[in-house]
Length: 638
Image (cartoon, rainbow, N blue to C red; front, side):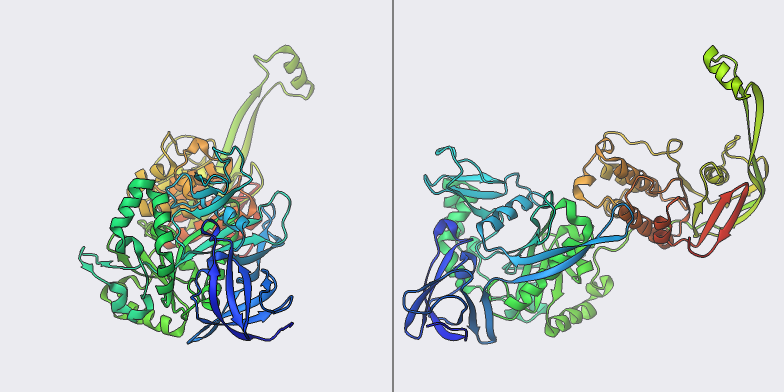
């Protein structure tokens, strides 16, 4: 009989191939005296217990005894005391993310992205490939593979050739290292993409909460079972931990088969019981991995938000109890506010010193979290924030920088002496023999720059913008000479001026063979502040932290130079040709972050730029127009 209504049934059995458990499974369900086989991913099928009630909706085909329904032929709900939870088809949502032109900074098109649970073999192969980009991954080879012909188990990042059979035709992905059978994966794929773009751009792994958690207080003392003291105890229980309960058996398997293969065999023995027992009211974000080419487009935050929807709607990973909290334990969160930007709140450090953050999914979860942040003495101090700016305030200028009737004249002598005859004849044809050229770049300029001001300097090439910076540099740094002293007038600077200067080709920091993180850290003496400065200068990828200056692209070098100057903690910062080698989107991000840092820290900054989008993002207090010997100012837009 055909049906579109939800029919009550019960689970009578399941069949999950041992070596294809992630992406293939069969659930046997009895409905109205008929037994039907439902094809689904093993990741979903493994969570069902024999005898438990379900609701079935047949969408294609007939429901009769012995019938077999494919992936797209039905929908299935698990019946729980808190209401039905849809288990199949897997979760899928469409999202849009705006792509901005790297040339103009304007929106040019919108990513159309599907976030869905991994269900097919190709999904898990893509997860393995993306896992290579995860900062926390210490493993060079991230996945286990198995040959169906000879049973050989191999470690590789992409599908390997079986060393025994000489082919990869019967090689299938077995597991992602570090995950457990309880792990569920959400993949993000481009629905519409160019030929050169990848299909998969990100994934999120969701696990049950860690079995136990103890808290390390600032004085080093340990508070055991901290979660049960803060939240209802049953929110984090029961969670089954076979490594602890079967430690002796695991040690034997590790000796016999090695760490990863031994762990896999242990899970095969105990996973049915582990999955049956697991039933927490919280979930854990164990991994967020975004393809490097797409990190700047906000897909990381989109991935986590999509995972929150998935957890809330499907009660992932167990599909049993309503979820109140999402937990994550991430050392990276100390140095990058990624999770906090999505709404996570920092609560405490584990006994091993790793930060723990929570995201509330329900009012109950939010109330319990806020109550802890209000009442706990340590939490009241940090207020739920972990990655707070540490650059701090510089010593603010004690007074303004003043230019008083400043004039600057450049004088040069042109002659043809010593040139080859052909070139001398060419120049003399244009009337060039010998002459003295005087050019007045600045004429009777009066200007006052207040402490903490952020000023943009604009003007035509050769108008005198760099000259203006040099005069201020000379006054702040006590320098003498034609470049640093005006022809007439005077430049006054406070005695506590500490100037940082970045003039391409003239004044740039020197880099050696050290990584850029080491370079910045050596100047600041604090690793968190070093990472903050690099992040604000647009070098927020951990791979770039380890890179040497010589290994960076032209645009990355420009950002590294800016970070190096900021690491000197100047209270006056002069930057010529700001963001000249950056695409529009990156330039705007850097300008916005730079302007915010300068204002927060009290830096007086003069930034020379030709680019309107940079000025808009910088949002300067004033704009100085330099040209024809004059310096005029504006407090409006540009």
